[in-house]
Structures are given as structure tokens and as C-alpha cells.
Length: 342
Image 1 (tube, rainbow, N blue to C red):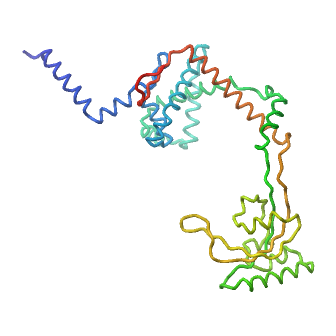
Image 2: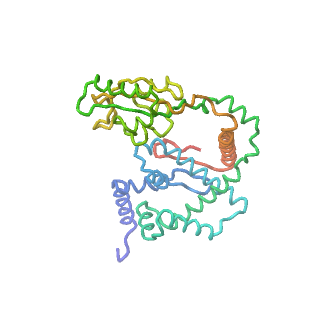
Image 3: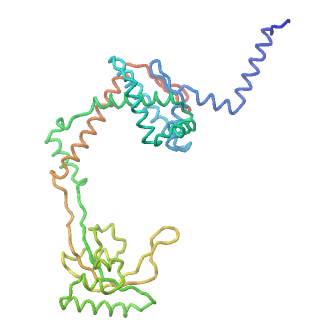
């Protein structure tokens, strides 16, 4: 046989190593990661690229299965954008990529190159791959920006029609601004004692004493130092207590309520809010009141223009991508697919 290995022995060893690779779980993972998941013209997308992208968002294995196709479609769109960019004879100067590279380094890693390299290594990504990704981001953003619709393309008629047909989006809730005087149980006082204290304050209010002065001198309100002022306008859904909510939204601006009793709420050990088993007697004053309504067209015009522009851009971009796809060879082969899709 001499010093050279026979062809039969080589074939035997080759088959043997192939069987070892296929039977080793670690090699199986390697094969899966390097599996071609999509092909766009002459560019391929491996499952490893898609898997790493989802890993960056801390997806579970179940989430990966559900959203893999979404990420593959996104990658296909990016590659199609690059082809369209290159077909126009355009290029990205290295200085632009370097500028974006340094910008990311400063913004995300405070200029720490070692930390940056360590993070890339933990993601299984080289600096060259990171630069390629930056280049893709810049090209993709440029190609999408060329398809944006200007504000001038959104006619006043379209804005008004959207406002008429989607009025529910611009409804405003009724809100109140409250002051309070509160008598709560300190040593288990009965309700009658708390109600008597509140009634004395009620009499003083009827005699002309200012509410805010009495609120700063009496009771146990957490807003006592501010004359009982809650400080902000609140809607009904922002008031947890049924008793306070019902009383507040039945009153008019400047009106003072009669004393009423509520069961105090507390946060339980499980984080939920429930009844504490204690009571308090409240007197409320409505400082300000804003009724429910609908924002005027002038108030929401910029918001509607932005919504319409976004919809037009999305439709235009999807039509553009569809045209690019018709002129490209695309094949998708996700891990769970039985056969490649074109």
C-alpha cells in the first residue's frame, strides 16, 4: 500500500466521519444554523441570520416559530432594496458607514470598543458583519425615504373625510379637578364620630369659610398641605374609589358635596388593589370641570395627516416591493416547511 492511503480506505473514513457528523447533536445544530432559509437572486439568507435577529429581541423558541416568516420577509425586503439601490448605480461612501459605526459606538457603548467587541462576540457577530448590517440599514432607510409621501399630497378633503369617519378616535373624556377634606379612622373611630367631624366642617363652609383653608387645617387628606388640591384633572377611569367617582361626576363646577362615607382601598401583597376594611368620610369640591366631547378638526389635523401619510407610504412601499419581487428569483425554506416556497 505504501505511504499513500487507498481509495477504498479514504471512502470508508469519509463515510464514517459523515455518520459521526449526522449523529452528533452539536453538528446537527451547526447544519440547522447554516441551512439556507431564503434565496433572493444570488444572495442567500441562512437560518442563523434569522435566528440571531430574533435572539436580539429575546424571543422564546415558541415565538421564533410563530414569527420566523415575518423576519424572513423583512430580510427579503431589505435585499430587494439593496438590489434596487445597486441597479440605480448608487453606492454608499465608506465615510458614511464609518460615521454611523462611530455614532453607534458612542451612543450604545459610550465609546468602549472592548465592550462593543464583547457584545458582538456574544451575539456571534463579527465587526465586518456588523458593518455590513449598517450598510444594509443605511441603504434600506434611503430607499424607503425616497418613497415617502409629502404632507402636500394629503388633501384637505381626505383629512376631513377621515375625521368624519373616525370621530371615535378623537373623543375626549370628562375630567374634574378636585379638592378634598378627609376624616379617616386613626384609632378605629366609629363612622358616627367621623361623620360628626365632617358635619362641623360642612357648617363652617356654609358660613363662608374657604374650602382650601379648612382643608389645610382639618382632616387626614394626603393633599392637606396643598389645601386638599389633587393637583391634576382626572377622568372617571383614573379614580379607583366607586364612591368618589360617582359623587365627583355628579357635581357641577364650584359645587361642594355633602359628607359621604367610603371604604378605603389598599395595595395587597400580591400587588392588587382591594378594600382595606377601614372607612373614611369625604367632602369634595369640584374646582374645575371639562365635559366629554370631540376634539375639533383643527386640533387633530396634524395627527390625521400623519396617519394618512403613514398609510399611503406603507401601501406604496408594499406595491414597490411586490414589483421588485416579480422581477427577482426568491425562494423561502423555513425549518418547518416541508418544501421550498417560491
